[in-house]
Image (tube, rainbow, N blue to C red; front, top):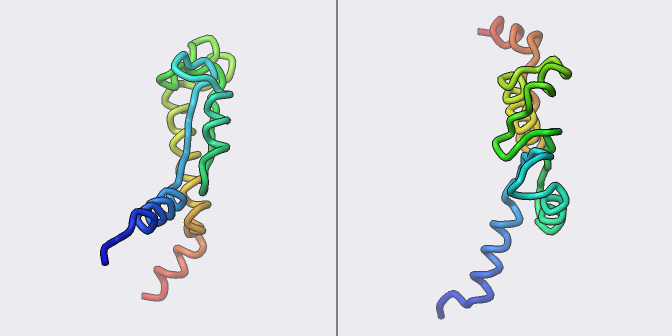
Length: 110
């Protein structure tokens, strides 16, 4: 009476289907195309998000001409990517960050 292979596979599938996936890809990436990523993500169960960065390369760097035309620096783009990933995680968790009003109310209760 051990664990059968089908039971082990079912547990593994449940774990895989509960994993969160967030893909960030540059549209000018040489290692993969946006179509390949979209096809890959379509077959993955569970919560997922794909973020495409226009004209970004494999390292998610955008050319200087694009930075100037958009009024962005690379550091600003990096922060936007981090914010998008954070928003994805927050949306999955169902958590809404406290507002300034709620924060003041909790401090006054002490």
